[in-house]
Length: 253
Image (cartoon, rainbow, N blue to C red; front, side):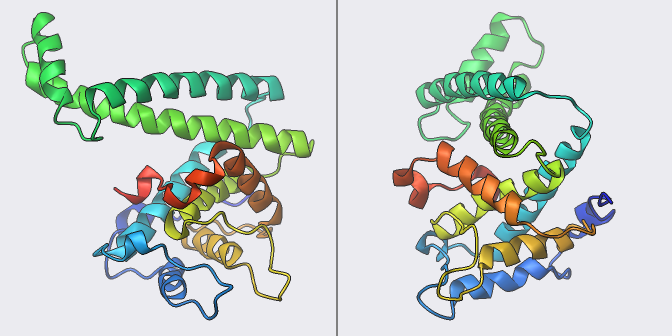
């Protein structure tokens, strides 16, 4: 039976300080792990004033990705389609990223606005400054979208390569988003299974809790395959040398 993904009030309560979510409890677990074998919150978050807000952003993005994946459930994309999508998205992402590096090396919008304002003045726009501001945001959103599409396509291709049944698309997208979140939070790739020393897989517990928080209550809540696929996809996309510094944009707001 398919889960009816997403609680109807999620968007209304996700950023409310009065709301409680299961994933909130993982903040304490990552700040104060029970032993040296357990994952720990990366020091870059030590000065973050509201880690609860960061966790809520992670939940929101995962739910959004899963909802988008549900809309694709009936699409008949082949392995070749996903491969070509990944390749095109990667090329487009590189082009947009190179442009942004040139015109906005510090990764903020202010330097772009005068340039785009001149562009709209040249096109005789009646509101050149307003349109320039809108366009600057669009460029940054395009960078994020193309990167996400590239990773999503790679994950779908990996799933199809490993198994003729790619599994639940909403669960795969949800898990992939949280796996990248985990890298950003801890500076480590999440484990695929429980440790050989008997330690539980805290990441799997985190995904299960977030799944319940998002209201995705299906019969099958085993994330083993989804986690394996997500970890393999991220290892293929993020160089090992960059894992400790990788922070997905949705965590930063």
